Image (cartoon, rainbow, N blue to C red; front, side):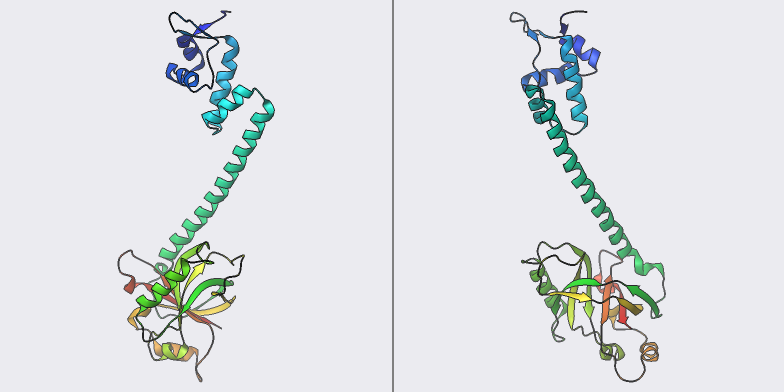
Length: 265
């Protein structure tokens, strides 16, 4: 066995480039065991092959060259294990975030396709919904929708709400009397949060769990079957939780968006 191997021989034996070995040297990650002062040629010993292989392996585990250089220089297994534990913790956090992003993507896909599963509107059906949470602002029936949207955006961007995770779905509270008159006059405007906030947020409202009677309509057009509604709720006007939730189906004209009206029963 030779005492020293040229940089070219070392690169060929270990499957790395000479540029990589020069970079390790320049960044003080791993210096050659011997450098000819007259020629400047770099030579590596057999004992360094193991270190070069470890550098590449640790790179594959996602450690930075700066971290690896510190590991090689310290020569401490304990220090290496500490850095690997930190790397593992970071990866687990990334996995957790990726899982949440996948859930958000699935939710958004469903939001765009939910009302498109059927072309039927004004047909009533029942669904069971869990407890939900919304950030809400009151509406003045005389103001344009843009004003309430601006108020909600302003509130959403300020503490304690600016750090909450929101779903990109908006909705309105409405009254049965207005539905019977085929009028869209919302009493409040809201956006969903992903979950119950873990700190005090005065304007977060709870939409109760329960069974809801629903129908679909482009509600901003103020056109739905009033006779069917009256048949479902005869007699005195019903007071309670009545929502109109927007389900986007295009990226251009929100005024044509389909809504699902949900009436808590």
